Length: 171
Image 1 (cartoon, rainbow, N blue to C red):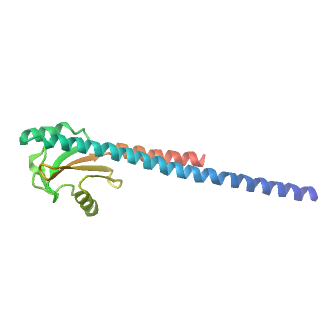
Image 2: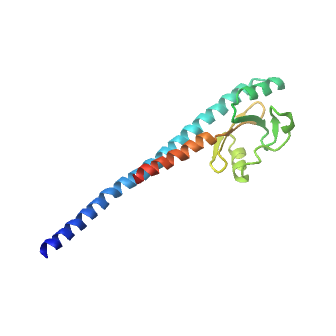
Image 3: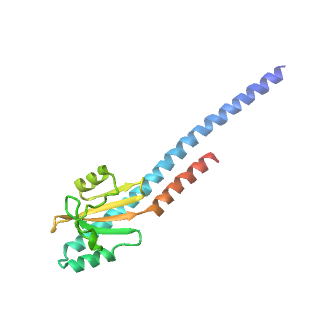
């Protein structure tokens, strides 16, 4: 009888010890997962901000509309679109002439559009639509250059990393 009580007590103590030793590991895993995700987003933001700044400085020196369109076309990859807008959000220069005069970024929420045109030089990551939008001011034109990136691959990688870290947490 006494042996049975001691073995139950030992089992309970071992169970509590194991549970209490796992809790700090879980807390650290969640903390690390969050920090890795934030670091990746910071790297994405920094990279896109620099791209917009460089493009704005190059466009600031160009006068010919054809050269501006060519510059906008050469700076973009397959998943990117670059254009120049006035400070109200209407497209001034675009590779596709049909879009000139149209409002820009209508697929973004009104809140993100307002933030983009108020802050002027910023990077916005919209995880819902999988897009990264960066902007920079072109001082001589009193306009913004906007680089619109459909970064589904980057955001999918980020989501996959988050799922992988959660899976490792459970393992």
